[in-house]
Length: 178
View 1 (cartoon, rainbow, N blue to C red):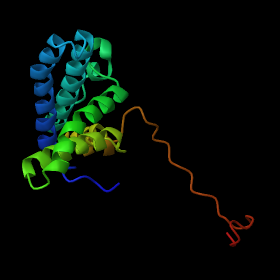
View 2 (cartoon, rainbow, N blue to C red):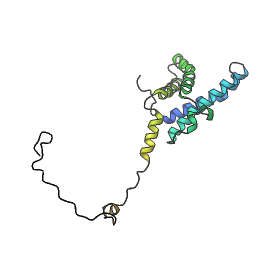
View 3 (cartoon, rainbow, N blue to C red):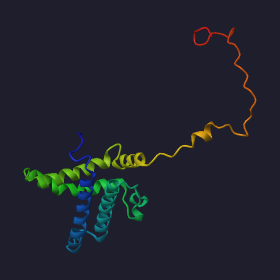
């Protein structure tokens, strides 16, 4: 599959993930009240989409991944949960984009969700790339002063080093006479 349209626009992807999370927060209570969704399933959907949104905003801000994002007991989500939630979230926008191909907002929203799905399975992941970029932006450790490296230490032996022995009479090395 070729790279998606907004592969490198991480801020847009974070906004889309936040929008999906907001849609869950506002829409799921109605589904629970109507009996179309259990409260536990609604809470899981909100938790998973919130984790996706937080992860993408951390990538945008150049922050390391929080430990809780990989642990559902701490409020995070497993990778398969993230992929499933995004796949479910993509169905209605993609159907709308197919029906209205000239509505660029609907098509763009559907494409951005598809890009989020693509990043969930891409190798290397967006998280790994962000971590590498963050590590590259950190200043390198300052080296020791040259004088400390060059100056002889008082603990070192000052005995002269014996000259190398002549190589005459040594056997051939790598097919060449030594």
